[in-house]
Image (cartoon, rainbow, N blue to C red; front, side, top):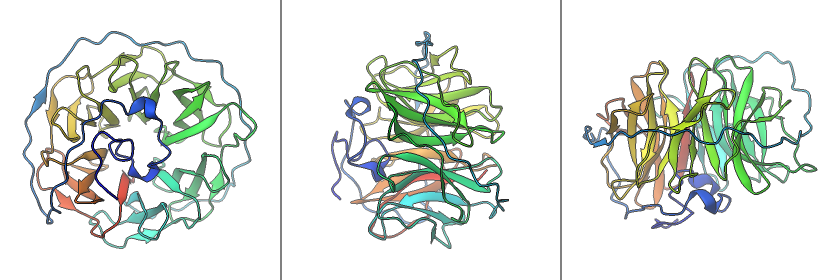
Length: 347
């Protein structure tokens, strides 16, 4: 797959959904030519900062919600498989969800469908994975045990005005799942019960995606281009008090709260390629962690907050890399001539 320059197919950082991503969030991206593959242990400098800004509130009035039907979720007791990293790969000819040890060993496929399975997200106890699949036609949210068993569909949108966009994220207590959905040609953040019932809209803007719940469950960070550029926003878990944390002429994508709630990692295009940045939870002290000259996206924290796993663009493919939380000791975890994207660390 070629490296794109300002193209829908790459720079969202979610390469797995190449032909499915909406254009409304992707204009004005900054791609860059790829470099050669890194060797394990490559270190990237940290310390570049973005200016802090004053954050005005965003719209807080949610749109009317059309309920979609749900199916009962099995009550099978799930058993955690321990600390793992889930990710998506097309190594077997289709986008499937895989799992591996945190050092990159024992990479194992969990799903096996003719249609894409994407956006894996571990439940807070690590025993389940929520994900998006197109196996039944439209995008829907599913759940499975962390070993890939008991794959169960949560949402049923065929006869509704909903279209699931994706990126499910569990609340810290495991009782709710935030996600993005399209209704009336607008992409917005919703929340539903963990069994798929009672979906409620939290935002009412033209485009808001990539929800990420704060560790205390009180706030949700997300990505929106309501002001022309993709910025990182934060709101209360009920959708109130929406305000942006970044405000610059670049695109800012895919926020991820640190386990202690003090910082948010995200991707930023200020440097002619997407790089991983980190900032305080109030938007201050925005600092670059990677400096690879290639697109680094989709960060996710280790449970102890000491490391960050992410997607990196190397040559014509995309790899899962891990680094210390200060940007040092970057190491490549996947090493095959296919695409491996959207990692999620068990909590």
